[in-house]
Image (tube, rainbow, N blue to C red; front, side, top):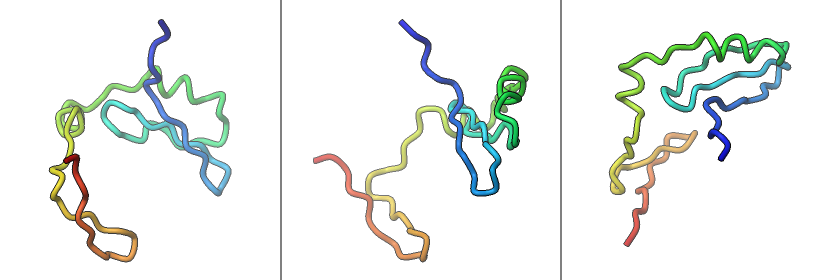
Length: 79
């Protein structure tokens, strides 16, 4: 069985690529040369406070959610 990915990669409009740790949600690197991503990813150590904050936490289903124009919506949960 293959290991699940530990980092997400996001392409930016300026031609850079972000490496984002999927465990602590930190942006590990923003670089132009994708060949450098592995080096930054191998050196990354998660901040324990961020891991605690994001590890397995989900907001309550009744928590309001804001969109980009600051309009609030109620997040629908499972019934």
